[in-house]
Amino acid sequence: MSKQSIAEIKAELKTITSMADPYVIGLRSDPRKGVQSAIKQREKQLVRLAEAKQAFGKRFRFERALWQAGHQYVAGIDEVGRGPLAGPVVTCAVILKPDFDLIGVTDSKQLTRKEREELYLHIVDEALEVSVAVNSAHRIDEVNIYRATQEAMIRAVATMVHQPTHLIVDAVPLSIPIPQTTLIKGDQKSISVAAASIVAKEYRDHLMAEYAQLYPGYGFEENMGYGTAKHLAGLKEQGPCAIHRLTFNPVPKYQK
Image 1 (cartoon, helix red, strand yellow):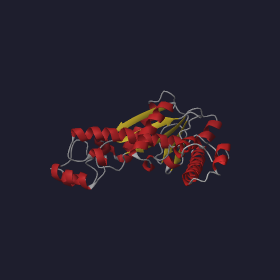
Image 2 (tube, helix red, strand yellow; image 1 turned 90 degrees about the horizontal axis):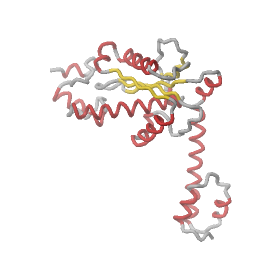
Image 3 (tube, one colour; image 1 turned 60 degrees about the horizontal axis):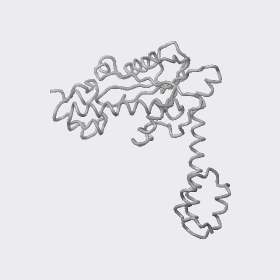
Image 4 (cartoon, one colour; image 1 turned 45 degrees about the vertical axis):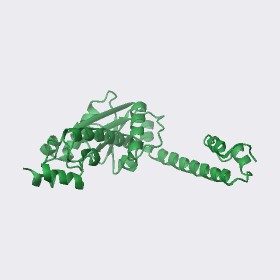
């Protein structure tokens, strides 16, 4: 039996990357239930890690194919904020390096706020380039949400220092002379698009938190402009504010 305490063994197991490690094999004869439980826990963690790495590899297949075809700069593009009643639509274009290895990067909607915040910082630090473009509620009302989203996406690409030779776009084809791969639910199929969705989501959430200070009473810091009960109650009481989309129902009926 190991002379280590269970706490010491748990700490050591965190450093183990294979259940075939001699240290683990030696622990299997330890009669303490806490030790055997720790072994099983680490085994489950390693299985989940292996599955995450495999899924990550699958979501990198579009980028790898394009790099192999000679495209040095491949940009993944996504948007956040097409559905809310208030606030801008935010788009992001991200160019990743081939050695990018943040396996936690996935569809921003599947992540907690804390996970998004941490990944956002790593993406901005590790990506070759990140470009964000915004279209306001006023512009959305002028041209409609679909066109406003396209405009912002195109602007995000146009302002990049490393001009991409291929785009991976989530569901919105862009009328610019750059070859494109358009994916439905692209943030679940492409790491570049997923990274763009995380950056766009964090950027927009922070904007809406700032707007909540300027326009209190709608709960923007919580609902990010979506039509929650608190938001609708604020609309009914105060009417629309400067960042409401006046072409989105039911906003017009609350105009005073």
